[in-house]
Image (cartoon, rainbow, N blue to C red; front, side):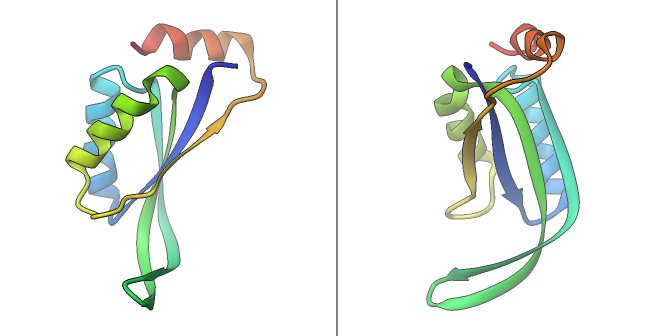
Length: 104
């Protein structure tokens, strides 16, 4: 499959929405769902951090990942934002076709 899901965390729902509008508007992604109210516990700069965040679940083509990553890094306030991709190994054909029609 050539479709992927990209997970991107952001410091707030508003920041996530700003990034999501940009990447969908620029056809780098077909869709970005925003899950608010997550809690992230992670190690950063030698200390364990515990922060509220929002999670974007982005659907796109694998071929667009590099451009998507560059754009997210331009818009994102974090020094090292989480931008990780996972392949979509199977899915509804109409939905996967919609991803193709909505990107690139």
